[in-house]
Length: 312
Ligand SMILES: N[C@@H](CCC(=O)N[C@@H](CS)C(=O)NCC(=O)O)C(=O)O
Image (cartoon, rainbow, N blue to C red):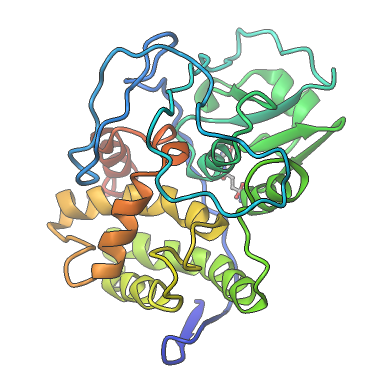
């Protein structure tokens, strides 16, 4: 069991084994099928935010600086950003794309929170034209994916410069460091150190929260208190490191799932009494690069119910 020490809001230290959790579900995005995609509307809460409306596919319209050494992106890149046209998932009947032809490809599943991290990073750096999304149907995987692309047979994976790399936390750092677009990791050593602590803490956070789903006696509230404290450390913005960064991207797909699930199944609002977390969710939901990757909360809740309540 990992342990967490919090020292007067100054830092979080985690010791203990790391875990890798998996999901297997991979359905088509209900509100974002090919050619019919979602639009951007103000989001008030995780539960009420999905509005399926016809929209047209296009490139992102927010300015993408040429240098990768540019400043942080603003939290809300709201005006003018247009929904990307998402390709259908490759399944066991699909031919592979022309592998290792120089195209950079990001293999994802639309439902995988780990893949979502990398997808968000790609979007937030404005790399929609540089990194092609290749969605995989994990329930009916094409054999070529394991045989020719990524032998661990998981998503995410990134095909770049004739190599394929995996592991979401490594990939978000790799993309931030090796591609153009706004920097998503600050230079400030204190922030970098805290980022490392938060990256290390995330497995333990996930385990604490999901153990509580299964009624294994741990209190999810403690984990969200840790998040509230972490969000209080830097005051130059509402995000983990003050300004928006890879740390927010690492946590967002999981909080996106925990929030509506706990609300519906346990009648527990993770934002209640946690103003920093409430603001963080609000600010994240204004980020277009993230919004384009979000799932319908109802669908997330159903999928978590199947996974965590199957034993009941
Ligand atoms: N530690 C990996 C976890 C990736 C992972 O577990 N992906 C799941 C989908 S959410 C997967 O590909 N599962 C397929 C399988 O295990 O066969 C990461 O952070 O990238």
